[in-house]
Structure formats: C-alpha cells, structure tokens
Length: 321
Image (cartoon, helix red, strand yellow):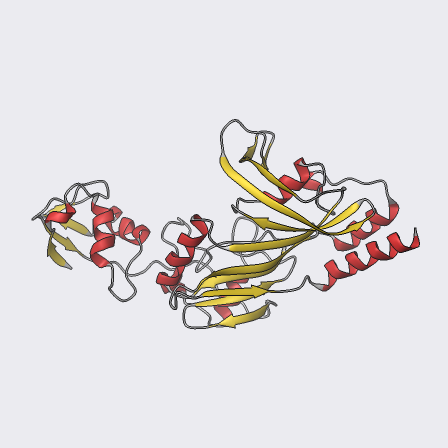
C-alpha cells in the first residue's frame, strides 16, 4: 500500500488512520495486526520508519509493507471431544464439556479446545492468530469458559469475524445466561460490584477492591432445593470468574467451587459435590449479532449429564426429607 494521507487524517494516530484506510478491504487487518507491522518497522512515512503513536500528517506519503499473518503455536490434535452446534464460513459454535481447557497456556500445552478445532480444520493457524497475544496461542478465541464450566461458546473463523465478535463482547451486547447450583438460599437479585484480582490469591478475583472494572450479574431463582438454590445468572458484564465471585461473596458459593468458598457438613451435598468434581456452573445461552449477516442468532444447550445427575440427587434428597 502506497498512499498520501488525506486531510481527514489530521490529528489521528497512525495506527488508527491505517485501520480506517484498510476498511472495506477483504480480510482487512485488525488494529493489533497493524500495530505489529508498525512495531516491526514495516510502515514508512515520507521515507522514515513510523511508530504507532506517530500522527498521520495530511499529504504525507505512507508506505506499508504487510507482513505475513502471525501463526499460532498450537498444534492440531485428534480425539478431543466436543459437540458442534453450528458452523459457517465465519464462525463455529461449540458445546464445551466440563474438564476441557479452552486454549493452550502454562500447564496446558495441548489437549485443549483450540487443538481440537485445528484438527477438525475449522480454522487455520495463519489466519486466526491474535496479534494482541504475544504467544499467538488463541486462534479465533473471543471469550472462554473455565476448565470446570460447561456450555456454549462461539469461535471466530476469520479475522473480520473475530474483531466483530470481540467488539460485541467489549460493549457487553452479547446475551449470556448460565445456570448454577448455589449452596445457599438466594432470592431474585442483582450483584453489582467492582472486579479485581484478589490481593491474597492471584488465581481468584474479588469485588472487595477499591479499584477495578464494573461487574454486574442478574440472578433469577429457578428452583429451591433445601439449602441449595438452582439459579439462572444473566451477565450484564463478563469478567473472569464473575458469577463464581458474586455468588461466593454473596454467601451462596456454587456447589463444588471451593476456590470461592464452598464448604458443607451435609453428607448428601458433600457427596454430590465430590462426584461432580467441579463447580456446578453451565453456560446455557449465548446470543449475538452474526458478524456477516448482521442478524441476531441465539443458541441454547441443556446442562451435561453430571450437572443433571447432581440436580436429580438434590431433588430426591428434598423429596425424601
């Protein structure tokens, strides 16, 4: 690309201007990809290597030498089990089973959803590496579920779809509903708090911080099961561990979620939690605007067998009592 910056570019950072300049181009580069080009010295302004923070001066000659797309380090692996709800040229919607890690990370170099998706040819390593991620190990992943959480997820298959979906998540316009077994007597309510790292445990999050991002969870009671409440949780925001944090700090930690305070002396509930072996949390609903058609789409999946078995045992215990 060789072009003279127009008058409308005045005052814009160079990376922002280049995003608009490439708009409309098939498989247009994302801002993070353009920043990678700038960091690599692949953009010149009037013959001088430019930086992202430089201004796009009207009339300046801008030369861009696009780099090959970054690759993910993840490898294709056969035999990773998960169901596919929907697939088209832009995205794939999957049902993540409990126990499956979403993407490679420290301690989980393989055996993840990403490895399984690569093996099924549902995206390519070159196209979907996220340049904002230094390890390039999260191709197409625009959101995630914890290892122990089951449920519906969307994964992008093109750069444009990835950026479109990321923007929807950032604006909190995605419909997300989870179901959970909360070990406490809850009523319909809304949890609204800050969200930040726990000062005593960097693997946990807490709302009891003086500074942090806003976190809002709407809780609706589905069924009362003695000391356990079967609830639906709708996310207004989508912070890491948000539902687990809110229910735990709200006095009703999710059954099996010891990290956020689940403890019980009830032998039946303890047995159910041990058999479940994970927090009783399931992502039931996911709705969003399709990045290509612009139409709303919605997917709903019931909880997996381990969750429904736990629910059945709780119902039987209540009936017996």
